[in-house]
Length: 512
Image (cartoon, rainbow, N blue to C red):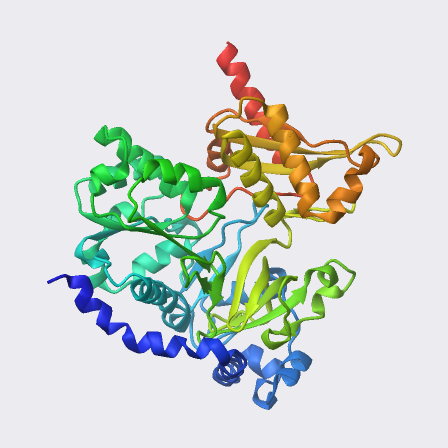
């Protein structure tokens, strides 16, 4: 008998609990707020912000300010030194070294024991629960799961705390029984050199009966390509005949969808998106026919949202609303309060709700990952849709990209400059750029207005990156592998100029 069919029955009670997300979203969130403030009322932060007197959401807003990492950094640094009862009860041992930041300064996100259990691991369990609910014939537990994670960062450790990528922390603290159904070995999984780790993972996994994958699409694709090189096979199901699902998150899947489609041709293959970050686990794609994700409301996370148009106004970032105040179709910057000691914390992501019964959403971008140099308000969601359309029309496949503005004098024209690494280049880069430019105008009225008759913005420019450029940039930053991401859009040119310099240097070396 299939092990998966036995395991599947264990998730039935959770399926019933998740039904409360349909109509009881506000009640679930009110309970989360009561639980969090009640638990932390005797911490230093709780006493300073009168948690004991908080009886309602309005009290919470009155007593607790909106915070960025910089505003909590002093408290987090003290916690890393071993102080207890600062932002969360007791002593917090683990800290996730944040990825996705556009500067070299690292963030250290507290990961408490409660946060591991009631946010991160609960999210992972619910992913499996919802997948098995939607796929009753699954046999995923009859084989192994290939879980791709990051590494520890021992050079950041202090006597009172340990640091690592969030995925490494999860692997380090996971129930040992899980190691019986996963690959690679723990030793390999926690290697810091991604190029060495990639090869070892491929060699360890290719002889196993792998049925499911978990990780960031870009890095998983790199590992799978190594599996194909070593095996000499054309399609992944020739190596792993029982492969059935990829649980992915960290970056948008759109740029990689076609590459996975060519690599895995099995009609039984499924893809399921998750929204998990160093700060918490927030969303799961609960319906395979709907690209939006279900916001997980009964974890140790209380959500608030700032309309993005107010966020960009002076002082606007403090005008937050609770979940029950959101509307569909609007972009919001997300705030979280969690059992890891983050209070009204601005996570940096923007989301757009597609439904409020239940609360479902798509990730639309980053509060710092947009281009608004000339009033065009271009967000990552626009870029992803535009690129997908241009690829569809030209047959191209994009591996990585980033974009930034080109600033000119007051009497000259300006434009957006894109550096794009193609897995499959279009026949005409100029045609690809034209299609992308027109699609962006269709998707974004502000961009369209600035492009009107080329008065403010000239047509966008695409610079074709040499193969491996983005990985080389990440390697130079010490961010190759794990959950690290390439910043997609930037309002200034630092990242793009770094990429162009590496691109030019590589070209010069090749010519020599």
